[in-house]
Image (cartoon, rainbow, N blue to C red; front, top):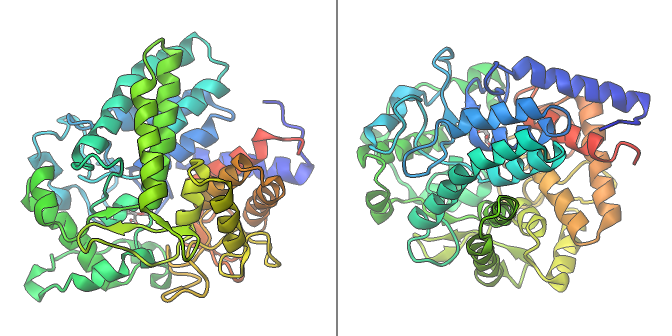
Length: 444
Ligand code: 9WN
């Protein structure tokens, strides 16, 4: 890609690449230098999308390192641990993942998943690399791995065959302490002896104000122990797991990744139709079962209570738009909701959208997933707005993402009321997606 960028933006590109170089270990990219020293699953997918703009080799190595840690049942783990770095909770010993017969013998991992953006990342790497022989060899390597990853999700996480897969831990959503999980967390009344003994490492690296509170961590840890006690046997886990949620963003990303998997199979001369059918089934299921007519948004579904989760997160708007799920009229109403001060799309603030309704119960401008601006959710939204022809909004959002990074730095998340950066600095997916925004249309 030949970039014709304004000098200030060319400098921003240089800085973003420096962030990724700084976090590159030689095998994978740390999400953040201090807070997140291991390899995370959806971070790697998003980082690979950034690398695909300028360094195919790095993108391929990033994804290969993650794929090599896959479980025998197809599960792609949320974390691949790097034994050189100890300071993270929960570490290898807390997970007991290798008690599962499916865990890999050559890698240490956690025992949960994260949103499935990997087929999308692989396809982007292939397309942007010029589709040569080496890129095709990477597709051939990745194809069976991606197939068994998606098969795992539909087989183990959608036992009723509804087209909607469940997540079983807030960490699986990637949006750990979102107010979307509050009602479930409140229901999870723990006796003192049920709370595992643990020591957090995160609040030593960043301000405790920015992070989940300890009552949330108690429940995160409890759920990990719950899975380990059941040997990571999915049938046993789903029998009485207190957290089973059909999440809108997770399923939307799966739907789009399934279409990308269909595209990969087409390139390789295989039959794309099983993946196309599954993608359309998921799209229809999201649109029929998760739509909330009253509020013009999609809502997560709590499988334990059997009820929708009435919490208004921007991921529930961004995901379905990104995956092209709503019809034009629903999309119009969703964009109108995004334009209200609740989310602030295209508004006077000039910042990207907040992760949670700014007037919603439980909103915080600084505490992690309870309101701050996250660049990945905004990047999905930008793609969705482009898809539905909201070109002005999409361009505005692209500009807002770039300006925020230029003015504040490549932070993990940002206060939607002031723009100030919070959480980890030098955060990899922020840098990677800013690069994607900057390098895709350098003249724009
Ligand atoms: C737990 C690495 C990960 C992201 C998640 C984000 C945060 C971990 C944590 O960091 O979660 O997975 O320790 O807080 O919420 O989306 O993948 O960047």
